[in-house]
Amino acid sequence: MSTVTWITARGLFGRRRFLLLLPLPLVLLGLAVLCRSLGVDPGEWGPPVLVGLGLAVVLPVVALIIGTGVLGAEIDDGTVVHILTKPLPRWQIVLPKLAVAAGVTAVTVAVPLYVAGVLADSVRLGLALAVAAALGALAYSALFLALSLVTRRPVLLGLVYVLIWEGLLGNFVSGTKVLSIQQYVIALADRIAPTGLLETSVSVPVASVMTALVSVGFTVLAIDRLRSFSVAGETS
Amino acid sequence: MSTLSLTGVSRWYGNVVAVNDISMVLGPGVTGLLGPNGAGKTTLLHMMAGFLAPSRGTVTLDDEPTWRNPDVYRRLGLVSEREAVQGFLTAYEFVLASAKLHRLPDPAAAARRAIDLVELESAQDRRIGTYSKGMRQRARVAAALVHDPQVLLLDEPFNGMDPRQRLHMMQLLHTLGDAGRTILFSSHILEEVEQVSGTVQVMVAGRLAASGDFRTIRRLMTNRPHVFAVRSTDDRALAVALIAEPSVSGVELDPTGLTVRAGDYGAFTRALPRIALNKGIRVRQLVPSDESLESVFSYLVEA
Image 1 (cartoon, rainbow over the protein chains, first blue to last red):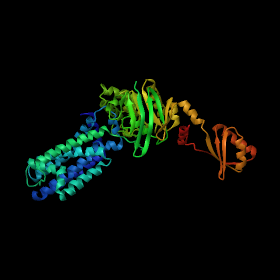
Image 2: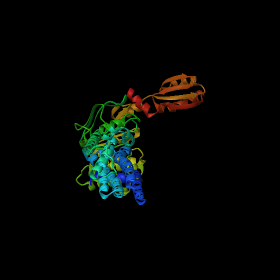
Image 3: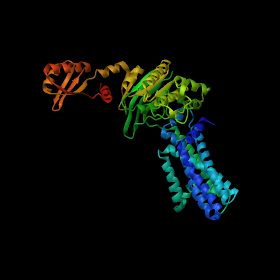
Image 4: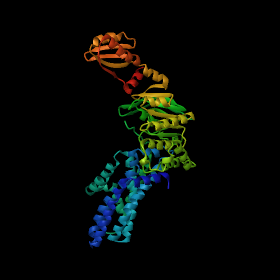
């Protein structure tokens, strides 16, 4: 494990902010178990719980908390200076941090989604949701990591993207769905395990290409921004 | 031996000029960067350390630019003013992580050596979060020294240190400077700079106000005229008596009292009670005005 990975992971798990990650996946899991045990028809609870809660809220919000935390928290408290004053090419800082963010997000979200998918339909749907969520975790993490270098308010901007762009505009302006990671995840999951529970609005090729583009593009942006990272003085 | 050169360096934020056309060459030894708060010291240090692009001019370390060039950190160490440390690490882990990030051949030995240097061995296995301010500062210095850099920049390194720690840090800087390292530290406290370094760069309002040997600059500072506000039972009579005094270079009479300019601080303050007593005047108020560091510095700019 690289030193950057180690410091990032310790920083992530060492902060209280990490506890914020737990409630959302637990709610998802709890609702799925509850619906299943009460014998509710999966056609009724599947879409709102799997998509409405799991893919539209739990995945992006967990990715937001972690993705803006791996580098953004260090920028906020100034500890980023320790890593930046080392003779490391900047990609060697961004990539390990992205790996930690995407990895932790994927595990935190994929496990409850897998269980919920199994309860709703089949092991195949569970796996499909887990895999698609992991890919989505990578794209979201790249986006939020880059945001923490581009703006001083990454959490706010990230929330605007998740809630307004993906959540609200997606319902009224169908064109926005082409630029929605949530829609890519749904399309990919539906491709792996076609069921009636997931309603797709972008094609699989578009979803695959865009997921890759978002992941790579924002990672490159983050590396470039870190190269020119300016530290302002306390007084300025 | 490394040389840090600044040529015509300016930095502005919007239409606020933080650093204005500064040129200097820093070679081996300890140099103090002195200036009041807000003079632009941190901005200048950040440009030296490659954390800020100069708006104009160049900053180079041995002819390589420091901006967008992480390789300079092989030869350069920075202790920033912000007291930022990963509190969840122990000092040893923290310094060891720095050594590993530098890809040193024997990180554990380098970490131990750096911790010895700042005398933190006894506390090295405690979490930094439990440290006092001075100890945290020493942990950060150890991390900055772990790769034995040729150039070390420290932003207000004595802040929050008790006298013993201060003395120790001063000795450490001396030792490093004597060993041929280029050390620059900033401070807004005159006495600190006086004790550590022979060479100073004085910054005021973004400009380099004075640079060179500390003693010369100190003499300039102590020989400047001092201004006092005086009120007494008979201001006019006192003014007449005071102007005959060699240490007094000017007296101004206004309804609220006297403004006295004295060339020699000591001689004037000794003379005043004697004169008042002789003339039977009661002095009600004697206030040295304009003694702030800022005014000392701005005097230097005008000198």
